[in-house]
Amino acid sequence: MSNAIFSNLTKNAELASKEIMKTVLSVVDENSFVETDKFICDNTDLGEATGEGVVSGFAHIFDIRVGLFATNSKVLKGSIGRANAKKIVKLIDSAVSAGLPIIGILDTAGARFGEGIDAMEGYSAIFSALGDAYGAVPTIMAVKGSDFGLSSYFCAVTDLCVAYSNAQIATSSPLILAGDTKADPAKICTGEYLAANSDVVTNVVKNDKELKSVVSSFLNLAISPVAESSDDPNRTAKAANLKTAESAVSELFDKNSVLEVRGGFAKEVKTGFARLGGIAVGYVATCGKLSREGAGKITELLNTCESFSFPVVNIVDCEGVLTSAETDGQTIRAVSDMLFTYNGISVPKLALVRGNAIGLGYTAFASKSNVDYSIAWADAKIGTVSGEAAAQLLYKEEIAQAKNKEQAAKKLAESYAEENLLAPAVAKKGYLDNVIEPALSRPYLIAAMQILADKE
Image (cartoon, rainbow, N blue to C red; front, top):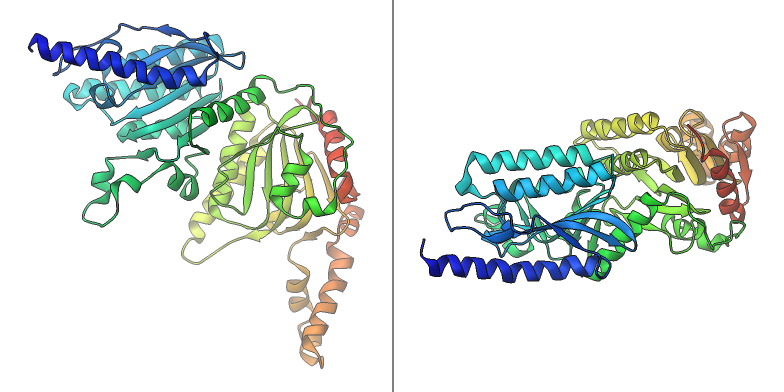
């Protein structure tokens, strides 16, 4: 290789390193980043690029010490090969040994195919390191530009995957995925698209400042599971502020503590992390019928809660499962996995039934076999089927003979619900710990959480 080409490659690598450092330094605290393995490099068919297009090191994010690595597509197309894989693995292993959170910032076109099997072995080593890290320390992957090929799978073995809105995450080049279609390759598998159509991307951000906000919010919860809260634990709520799952989450948990994840996907269930009386928790807030995608979304949250000992708070308004002949098998698998995970985790589980808990809505989210403490609003309805369905099953003949069938069905449904489904009737059978007024939901949940927080 000529000296001119080598010099140009080295110069480009240095410029790209400065560019990637802008993102790194915008995410971490000022003057806190200490770089590691800065001069590592390997021979390629284009020569050597100092640093291999990967920046790695340790820093603080709002005083929380972290290990961090970042790739850049402007150095050897961001390709991952033997040397930079070793650099990434070394950073991950060092962070795990020190008990530090791990943050990866990806912008890569995929494997360095010129290295052949060496590059594949590098990927395998990274997967192995991430597997060891997952559940041991907080792990966050952020995709700023491209994330193509095998590296796209890194996103699914971390606690959070944060994507910039126009970033692209794909198992192969978008040009290949677009094929002969009229689809615009630049709009395939973007962060926004994946956040709305899969559970891979947990959060979408527009810039580096928003990335730091999401990362720091999660790390604060994971690193400091109990913190002093300035929000009044006895604060009551207005019924008007509890009408939707989203508003209930905002009203019940400590102010400015909520971090929603996978908010654009399976919208019948809200999942995320927050504080309740200063205690870090995961929350599952259902509304309507649960889909198989929603079940998978919940399972992902539960796994993270178990990893970091976050209690789980279920805010329940669920009328069972959304089914169809075409996807019933997939639904069975997804819901079964969710139920298995719920029963397998060891953290405290609380339930507030604010609407319906019908069928699976009760079994999964509020049953005495599945949660440690359960409360419900007085007008909440809990049972096998809804009052309307029960009336049609039990009083079919009476309804058929009635002059006003619609009115008769409604009256019988209300009568059945009052005797069998309303929370006070269910509580009499021992299946609820308490029946409360909506305004008192937050104080009751905090009181229960404080008792259960030390559960082994």
